[in-house]
Length: 314
Image (tube, rainbow, N blue to C red; front, side, top):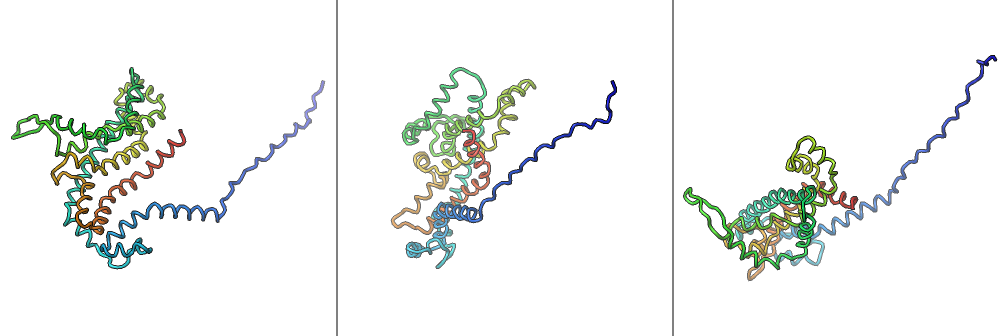
C-alpha cells in the first residue's frame, strides 16, 4: 500500500500563556505611615538617652528649669562641656572606663570559648546524662544572683592563686580586691550555653559526619565547621554577655575595696553625696553609655539576624 508522504504533521496547540502576577505596590500613604510609626518608636525609646546627653551640657538649675518644656530635650541655654571636666575631677573616670573595658572584654572573649565549647559537647557529642546536665544548666537561670552572692564571696576568699614574688612561684589564698574576682566567676554563663546549644542544634549534623570521614577530630569540627557557621549566635552572646559585665554594681561593691580596681558603675555612687550633682552625673552616664552603643552598632546586623532566624525556626 502506498504511503501518502504529503500528509501534514499534526498541528501543535500552543501552550496557554503564563500569567505573571505583578506584585502589588504598597500605597504611598501606607508607606509614609510606616515610616512615621518607626520614627515615633525611635523617638519614644531614645528620648531618655537624648535627655541624658542634653542634660550633661547644662548646669543643674537649668536642668530643673527646663523640665516642664520641650527645652529639656534640646541643647539650648547655657550649653558647655563643663560637666565633663567636673566628672574627671570628681572620680577617676578614665581608670574606671579602662577597668570596665578590660573586665567586660575578658568576660566576653573567654566566655565565648568556654560556653560555646560546653554547648558543643551538649549538642554534638553523645554521652550519658547530657540531658540531665542541660536541664540543670537551664534550671540555674531562675536563680537570682542575690541568693548566692554572699556564699560566693566566702568561696572566692578561699580560692588559691599562683603568683610570682621575686621570681619565685607562690600560692596565695583569697581573690578579694583583685581583677580576677570580678570576671572569672562570670565566665561560665548558663544563658550563653543555652543560646549556643539552641543554635548548634539547627546546624546539620551531616557536616560532622563528613568532617569525621575526612579525619577531623571533634575539636577540629568545633573550630572549623560549627563556629564559622555560628556568627549570629556569637554576636548575640557577645552583646548579652557584655551588658551584664559592664553593668556590674553589687558584686564589685562586695569584693573590691581599692579605687583603682573599681568598674564604671561603682563610680555613679560618687555623685550621690550630700548634694546630688545632676549635671556631672548625666555627663558621667553619657560617657559610660557610649561603649555599649558602639558595641551594639557594630553587632546589630548579626544580632537582629540571630533573633529573626530563631523566630523563623521556632
